Image (cartoon, rainbow, N blue to C red; front, side):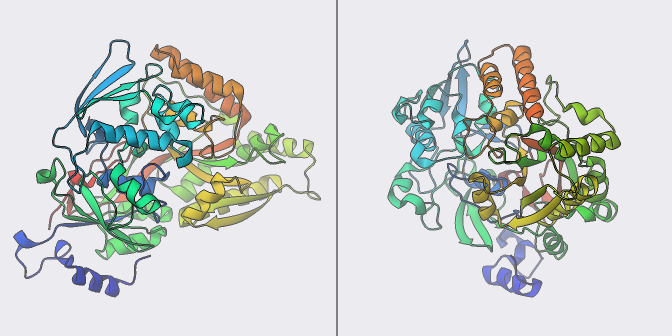
Length: 535
């Protein structure tokens, strides 16, 4: 957490950064251009093969670059690959790498680096929660499951600057998927030397527009412009500082004090005030994400009682949450895949079309049938990661469950890293969670609940029918039929209710007038290399 404004000002002055925030005696031509960003939480890891959260991905997007990369509007652009060709059958992608691509230590970045990186993330020994991102590549899934050695991955270096990738089936979203951090290259020569400590300042080598120079746990991460980046001449910000501010009220105060140029989020209760008083700086736009509660279906009483899961979902009044708690224009969610995918027909639970009174009446009936009443109330613990907004939603939902069903809900909050461990080990009953699409396709959501995904599957859900439908969709070349299969999978998921969709996201940031080049987009991608900071 940041110190007081006075101490923070001293820190900036010592670092020579205050010139970026205020005019001073120094010549503007000599002033260092600095961007200070709120980043939500202390990063779990900066290793692209290990990390799982959005806060980590925002930093990784600046310090690494994959074969392709998001532009300022979130759409796909060429990255390390300057061009690519796709075979007529859609199975083979041949990427031509930029001949001037190098790591930040000057070592050439070649096709073999991608092979090393992808084999590493798929290796069961790495225990990556995101290995499944690369499963469209032939043999990738079998490698992750320990059924094949990693050198059987269907990726080949034709020469140092030509990478050939063969897929197991045509995959419409493959190029979009390569924007994900799991597909970034990592420097094998550094990873092998420093092992688990390779991402520490002084050790870390990257290939993006920025390089990590400093990491103060729970303080900040400082990244500086990478002079060896292929497009360094166009990068206008010299230094970017990422601050892990989990309390959004604190973040807002620091923004208004001039200590931040952009926030990670905003306090939900302040949204009406921001709309009225900071309209020019307040950004509120659709986001490809779903806020939900995961139910641990590996434990009783929810493991064998699907109706009980539905009852908890029915008793949540989403309209009240959105109007009185979140206040960001979110959409009530009665399905899993958010809107925004052209051509995809969303599914929703049967009771999604009922009025709230009817939902509560049915939920009460279900609890009574399960043997829960005033003398024997259902007791549930809600786990959420430490955050004011999540706390307010959890309190509201616990109150709805108590008032409508007599459920006795207790709350447990944990810091981000501890929360992730509890999630992965299924040490919870009901878990606050969210999923942001890795690419604009329903499979980015539906893949998460497959039984073979592992720890990343938040509820421990495992249904052969569901997996079969997503398997068929992954191998279907006709887009209409593929979407129909995915829609059927979503219906199966919602009938089983291992997760309780609550709302579809909008995204909120406050961005200083001094920041130019910020473009709202469905994926909420804002790479620093495309931004600039003016006086």
